Image (cartoon, rainbow, N blue to C red):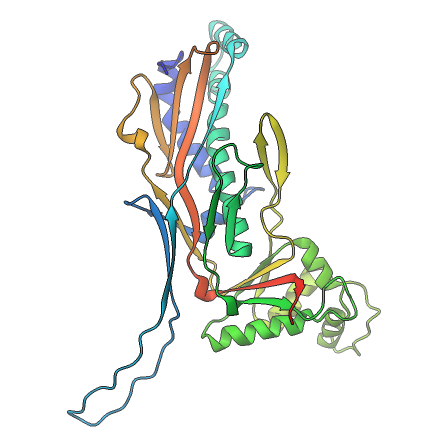
Amino acid sequence: MQKSLFIQWVQKFFPGIIVRTVETLNDTKRPLSYLHTTMLRPVFSVTGKWESLSASFSLVAADVVAMDSELPLKSRDSISQASGDIPKMGIELALNETELTQLDTLIRSGATNGQVIAKLFADTPRAIGAIYERNEAIFLRGFSTGVTVVEDPENVGVGVRCDYKYKVDHKFGVEGLYTDKVNAKPFDDFQRIVEKATEDGNTIVAVYTDTPTLNAIAATDQAKEYYSFSQNSTGNKQIPNLDFDQLSTLVSKRYGFTFIKVDRTIKVEKDGKRSTIKPFAAGAMVFVSSTNVGDLVYAQLAEENHKEAGVEYSKANEYILVSKFRTTSAGLREVTRAQARVVPVVTAIDEIYLLDTKIIQA
């Protein structure tokens, strides 16, 4: 690795480009917003490990005793733990010799700063965004199943598996598959979860699921009947399928929670071939009593303490190390690299309830 071919431009504009990129990616109003940035809080790990501690916590009323009497000893809540090493992720993008020649010509022709910056730093938001995309994929899979896996077909590096230890009694199946419009009872399924949450001292505020699941619910006879009754009708099953607003209004009035659609598609690449994945488990419904469900745990990269001479470094979001340099080993290239040691961890497992609509509960 050697000094960038455009070091003056890099030293002047590189940090600012990174700041603006992070601001854009963190904007919740953009078309592809990231749930992991809004539902997880960044937490630095000194040890390089992620850890999730869960206590079966319940409030027990204090005893009323006579003056000078000893207090009775109460049992302590049980604690379970999930932990593991924080994996490293990274990506490299490069301008090849042809693109570098074009950039040289652009500069010599008197191009504006904006034109040069657009060409020279085009890979910077892509590299940072790639870390965001991988974090989102890991989070959505783990959030919707309790276990997240980055498999070899999706990732060039080593596979990663994190088990968040979702509680067995917080996992539910359905009375009838939602594709069976007559026998499906989605509102009975919701009621069981709401009752369990209430028993645990929790209040469900939101349910995350995909659009096909919501469409299937809206087409069931039970949903149509309940909506019809809510409109002071006779519960006619022949009414059209409910739309999203009608279904949302119905469950909000009945249970107090809202539906949040998760239909995120992530592009992955291996051996030069691109494909898409949908990390949120199809048919999963995740009931939460808080939209803050865990931590985005990160650790320091070894390269931060052992930086390469001539390489320009900058940080994005405290945990993404972005660097710019040139290489000549396989032809002249101007490289942008982003790397991080980071993993999304769901910690609020006492307040999460998982409904798998593809499994009939015995």
